[in-house]
Image 1: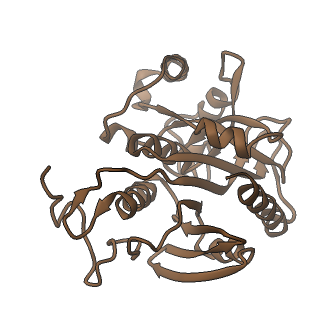
Image 2: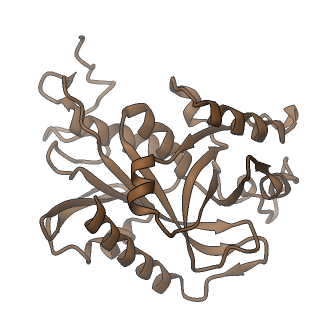
Image 3: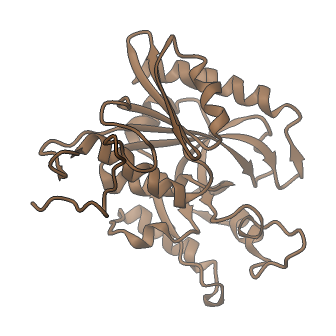
Length: 291
């Protein structure tokens, strides 16, 4: 096997991986991802101890312990372009020997748990509630740059979703699914649904401020989608990328969405910080008890 080149896997002068500024050993096998760098502190305050705090750009990492469990929390920033960086560099930290630049013979699986915010699109989903992404459709282009495979169920869901768009939109969606083990261990009793991951916040999520949308029917398409008894429940900007790359790289991923808005009834949370903190605490307890 050829070593990975210095321009394909870039390391800093201290041997840390380029963007995350982390060394092998800096992260735990369980990694919580959040979008907002400030939210890293809102998660790590529930750790019993913190052994490491590092950051570069929007990527802030804290690693510590809850009881005997070692755990990391890492900010990704917004969007699947950042997810491409985060997932690949996390994988490199645990599965590539930085001295030889060759992948390890035995590959490690990380548990990657997203705790993010999202907007619901179905009127029955309550603002301030928690939702799990059982699967996600990506409207971005990230997955198209990687070789991947779909299950028969995924193929069918994707075909039906893609058929809802006409050829003029130039949208080529992909699909990715949550890890079954993490769903079983962490998502019991939490509502599940299909998430749409958009490549932007405004027009790519059906919002119109001043610029006119090229797909004015977008919200109608995603809201009315039904296939095999499943529906799309919410919109956000990272989950499909996390699920897709986690599967490709052999890791386990699950995405929890704190619903701060309901687009169907034009309602936004009156206490977003308090609600986020409540769900973070509950999820930390679940993670500590179940994985």
